[in-house]
Image 1: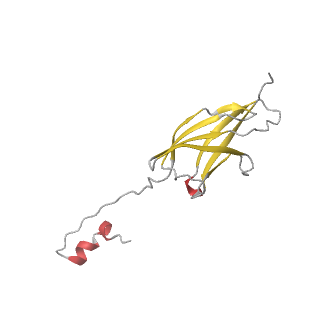
Image 2: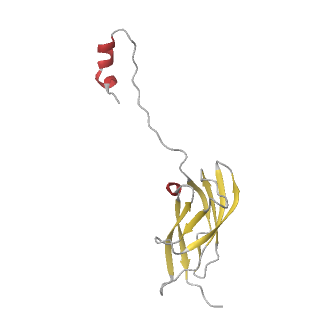
Image 3: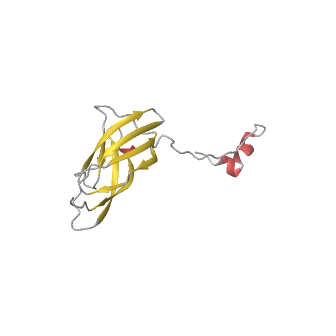
Length: 135
């Protein structure tokens, strides 16, 4: 890249050639973003349906699935179900897995939804478990 526009050297070296300087900012609008998330808390026994609406999420198929990791090691995995998909928006349900409360009344975890096709396009949100009371 040249900085001739900033220094004026283009005009000096090119004489009568008209020059114009400009700057631009680039951003990747293809990076997925969570538009809406519903039901972000549930009992420690699991089975909570978490509804996600995600913009620009990669298409999910039987071969190109997504993993919902409820821990950093990837050992606690939720079930991912596609409700609908368009290139602009994906509607998903994640079923929360059981969570070991370790004696706590509540536990907030970071959930990573990672598409198999491109792990750079993962999205994250928090989910809070509460201790399930016996009935």
